[in-house]
Image (tube, rainbow, N blue to C red; front, top):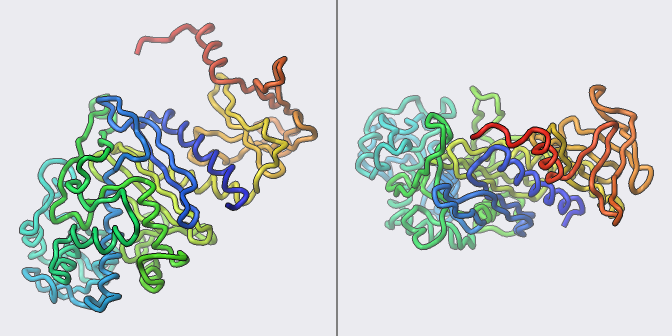
Length: 459
């Protein structure tokens, strides 16, 4: 393992657990792989707020549009064996389409550049107002003309990926879920992944949850809807570890994979920019990508009733991160970005020496928590309440095991002032002094606040 990775992962786990508490999210599951080796797997919070069931890494989540990456890999497996071509018109394989839709190619549909409707005239299937489309309803919608001509712009389409499920069925003469499970899920070595909810029976599953508004409280969303003909767009169920294992094999640099290097390069190549967004995202063949330099990433995200999920592969770092949340306002996107920020900070700073281990702690004051985090030649003071906790971090340079000085900080902080560990009579660290302030243990600050302010208003 890269020397900096272990301390980085330890801080990721501490930070994410704090974030889940701070934002009062129902639950979050995370997995991080280096290559194909699982280096971190953790879960925080609840699988079901109504029952209080604790969330574990073995709980499955509705990973929604991650399904598109599975479908894309399935199409490319068929291309590799000569049963499909990316430039095949989809009408060669599926009947009943509008003539302009029948003329678009499989590759255009895969890259979300075919100009197709996103969800048809009634998107109630994503609002729990109706069942997910069956094949007949899907084909009725696709008998109408496309919204734009093909290859005019990036335009995301769930109906498009449902159409690709029909292409797979036509090419293989087998049901989509059966074929994808045998030809993609199994070769990828995934034991905790299913193409739709009906294939998850008997295994633990996280329930979805609403946001707190408009009711002023969260309600449980069962999220047990079969996806029917939409399974190839949004049906998959998986754990964070299995989702990460799958995406790690899509990296063009993966040492082993169920897909050829050419197919993996094609999947992750940046084909279309999401030009109306400020996020700098691109779409490939069933993958989303972004980032710059050595920290460029590709992966996918998903939004299902009661779930927000996201996975990213950082090929140059040989790292894959999957963050699954079970709330409709889940923070999978900023949390994954925050994890990347933490990993990058440790990669740039380096692993801390054993001699600075006594400084590693979460300290508290009336103003909340701050994290004291050793790196190679500094002690950093991070703010775990931020999505980027090391932003403008105070830096302390040590001059002994227990003392140092603030050598880099905003002028609004305490640059140039002393820092030290405060130990009890037995030699255990109880607090950290930085300038005139002190960071104490959480229990001590809680007791002090209760004594000073009482129990506060009834809630």
